[in-house]
Amino acid sequence: MRQQTRFASLLAGALAIAMTVPAHAISINKSISIDDGVETDGQSSVNGSISIGAGAIINGSVDTVNGTIRIDDNARVKDAETVNGSIRVGSGVTADDIGSVNGSIRIGQNVTVDGEVSVVNGKISLDKGTSVADDVSNVNGEIMVTGAEIGGDLTTVNGDVTLEDSAVLRGDLIIEKPGGWGWNRSKRKPKVVIGPGSKVIGSIRLEREVELFISESAEVGGVTGEMSMDDAIRFSGARP
Image (cartoon, rainbow, N blue to C red):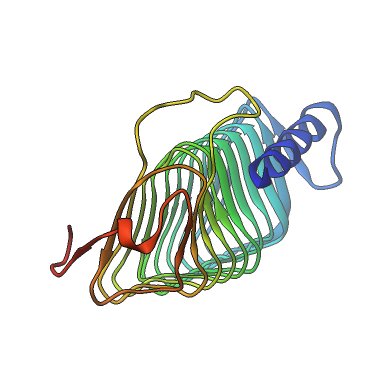
């Protein structure tokens, strides 16, 4: 699974933080705060949160093992990763990859992510004008895409998915079948909503049955797998 690879990468990064001292600043049992407009190298913490001020420039990655990451408006970073903690990204931020193992990821308006956004257990939300060049994925947790664009695939196992406000997914929307690495095999069907004006330029690939709702004004490149387009419930209002 795609998530397995990302999960292993995040844990490997956490182990590196905990067992080695990187070239950039590291904090043990203490949070890190970077002021507005400051330019600095990457930052790492073990058991501490990281806050990046508005307009700050981080010439490296920010990562923590146990703690949240907050990136204020118009800041620039490379990767932002945490193992146990949420990530909050303000408007106008530029980043490469954003990832967490356990914790939600909330990305504001007009954010540019040059890589991917991923979490294992947690909600992902992308706001208006945001662009993610590569994939967006989780295992458990809702994925909400509001007027944003995703260049790769959108993948989940147990999460509900909503594309609204003319969101665009250029790759496939994939609902994977549970199993393979001990996740809870819930019998609940994920809910997938493709809202008015939204587009799935690829296809909706379903490895399990879902509750599928597609607006009459949405564009979808097809439905394959355990269901077909004939199984979708079409709706005409703002929401089903």
